[in-house]
Amino acid sequence: MTNVAPKLIAGFLIISMAASSLGCASRASSVPPVAVPSANYEGYTCQESRTMLSQAMARRDALASSQNTAATIDVIGVLLVLLPVASIFGGDKEGRLASAKGEAMALRGAVTMNCRREAEEKKAKEAYERRQERRPSEVY
Image (tube, rainbow, N blue to C red; front, side, top):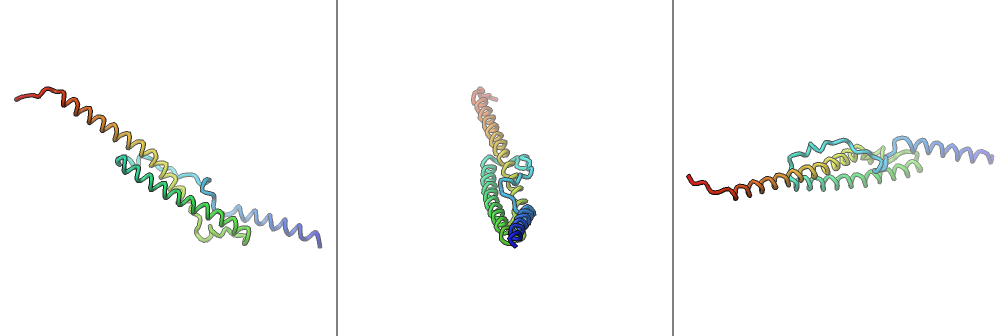
């Protein structure tokens, strides 16, 4: 009778480990971003780009927090009932988090691109205006 308990415990551990590796939510840090081109955000002003980046980062952070919570709930669920509870009931936000990460990365690049373009345009306009001021007035 004493040999049965270790076998049951070993069997339970094997089943738990197998169940925990199937369908559990991933930690947010292990979710890779979806590729989103920065060119999607070309033509916005520097300020608009910065605002969109701030919003995208807030969305990404909220989804990352939700994803980490789902991963924790899945671990607890697997330990208690052998099921990844959060993933089963829609708590896994992996796809949305991957999109939000990609969008934030693209917007980071777009902020650089749009702000640089805006600064160059401003510089060119100021140089043009200085040249116009130096020209002698033409009288017709």
